[in-house]
Amino acid sequence: MAAAEKEWWLCELLRFFYLLFFPGLIVCGTLCLCLVFILWGIRKLLQRKKNSASSGKKGKNQIVIAFFHPYCNAGGGGERVLWCALRALQKKYPAAVYVVYTGDVNVSSQQILEGAFRRFNIRLIHPVKFVFLRKRYLVEDSLYPHFTLLGQSLGSIFLGWEALMQCVPDVYIDSMGYAFTLPLFKYLGGCRVGSYVHYPTISTDMLSVVKNQNVGFNNAAFITRNPFLSKVKLIYYYLFAFIYGLVGSCSDVVMVNSSWTLNHILSLWKVGHCTNIVYPPCDVQTFLDIPLQEKKMTPGHLLVSVGQFRPEKNHPLQIRAFAKLLNMKKTESLPSLKLVLIGGCRNQDDEFRVNQLRRLSEELGVQENVEFKINIPFDELKNYLAEGTIGLHTMWNEHFGIGTYLLQKSTC
Image 1 (cartoon, rainbow, N blue to C red):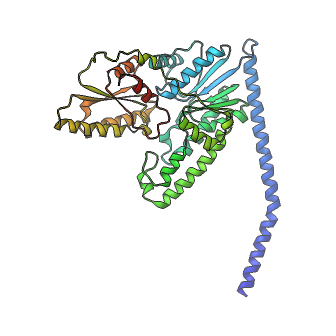
Image 2 (image 1 turned 90 degrees about the vertical axis):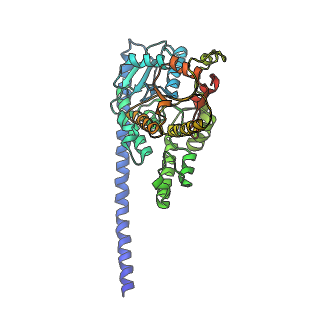
Image 3 (image 1 turned 180 degrees about the vertical axis):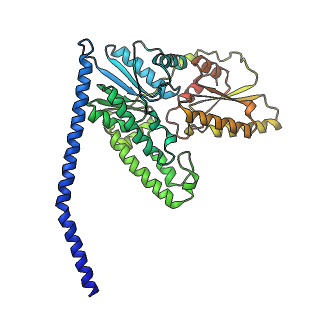
């Protein structure tokens, strides 16, 4: 009796779902059509806005090339690539209009250009229009203590929408690794899109760290100690890598900064037909001009580290290693040593990291022998590299490393 009643309930349940199937299918189809029409309407609206902006340029049909670089006023290798790319394009296409989407709202356009010249010795030959974005906080890692990659990627979509609503370009270039903005500009903005990838948002190496339950700057110790959490994070990473591959494949042109990045992008984005290596511009001639036998202005030896103050650069390891070296120096007759950490700070998170490094130096008792040089001018950087004896770099899986290249080519 109980078995028959159970079969009856199962039949009724199946019949219920069967009756809902076709109405549900119709509702889903209607919603999909509405979504398509809405997106089509938005695209038409943006195209109309773009055409009206073009007609206002004294009747000239100038192509608009836009770079998405929310931290363009920073002093890292990515910013050097940005300014060199702009300078090269201006030489080749002087009639085009150049736009930079930036979140540096606390400085003026002129201050940004002056900073580029002061830090990188780069001066543009034609004007650049800066579109200032107010929602850059949406891509700050501090806003997402958990699921940081997903949070920042979704935040970049909203930031990209703000950029698209202010200026619809003909050519859109993501020069800072926000791949989730590519479909937005391609399918809604109707732009040709390209990307310059310094470091993939997720890589097979990051997947292996989680899979092997190794502690890293992006894999907390409490996760590595818990097999269940490690499995959940691994599934999350695989799903994110799949979506990252989909949005990245929207690029019409992909440029990467090294063979290491190339291999990862090819495995994730699968767009080998339009992917090329474009090595970052390194101004080595200035450092090659430094005489090798030039007399040092400071006594002892300088250990020089060049790199932005980000977690992956692993500056704490440099300070701990230097502290051990100083302890050895106490027992041996070694000359005076000083560690100079040179790098750029993009935001308050980077400044917080620098303060943590200062506190670490104090805890280890080496604060008198450690100096921090933040956002220094190009000439000052050149002087430190000329004075340095040893170049220090501790990033795991360094994708290119302009800093290490300069250290190698200078007198260090």
